[in-house]
Image 1 (cartoon, rainbow, N blue to C red):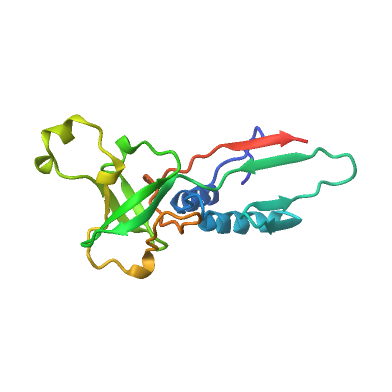
Image 2 (tube, rainbow, N blue to C red):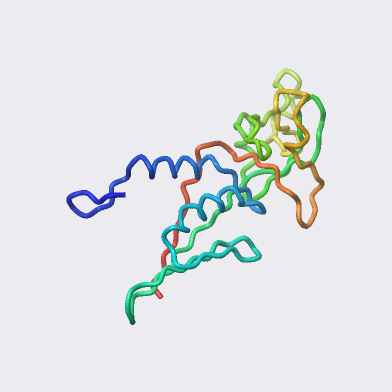
Length: 189
């Protein structure tokens, strides 16, 4: 990144590619490995030390020159809300649970990516002509939604279907992409 005439860094093609890589990576809470790999690739050349702790946090140190230099802590999160597949209804339809705070009312029709291969899918609900008048009067429940992968021949190696457990293996379905505009916190120490 090169600064402009006022000394402000200019966003170039490399920064746009990095932003694209980050927004296209899945990092549902519980498995942020895709984003972690990107972060590690980007910071390794610029820091003095880097390690990943047992919780998956990336910890890096860049030492300043001399004594008494300013100490800065930069903190950001790598995870995002998403879903975990909890059951297979056959014919490419999958039951799921939310991971994180997602408003169920906005889910029908949302595009999702499923599995390590980012299989494209969509969250669907029962068609209007098959619903009762009672169902049309009330908010749709998560239990009534399914992820539709559009095929009964989904490679099972792409999916980790499991009941909710203390440590479920997520199968990702970000609400839509691109989407990861995140908060970064900076503290002066």
